Length: 177
Image (cartoon, rainbow, N blue to C red; front, side, top):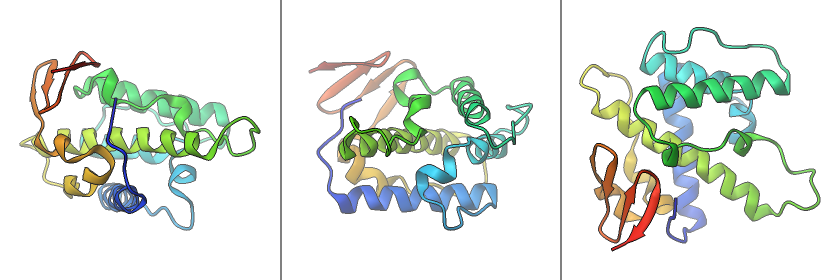
């Protein structure tokens, strides 16, 4: 997914809003953990989606191993698909892995990966707010404008086609209009 060049302030607002929403919905705190560290084991993400749609995930692996975390993240992403998010709206499971010790990975790459996670949270928040049975905390979608650009705040979704003022995304591929 393409997004505008964003300011650090715009991204910071999105991180803060995503954290606030996750904590309010799940009633669990990030504590002193960073955004990535708090989500890397997938438990909080699974708790989030089970709160939005109870029972969609049958079992959360609470072991503190990297394999358990990857399993939870994959289960979360499959649950997002069941709720109607498409592949273009989902981050890659590896986006939450710690790559800070890899010599070849630049800081921008780590930032890009976390922005992908934010994009999924944005779409999940939109999906929750469009559900007439959801009465929980609302995600402030405007906080994501600095990340996604103001165009996505005016998205109209019809089935598999998402119409944007400058681009159309048809089943995840961008076509310039």
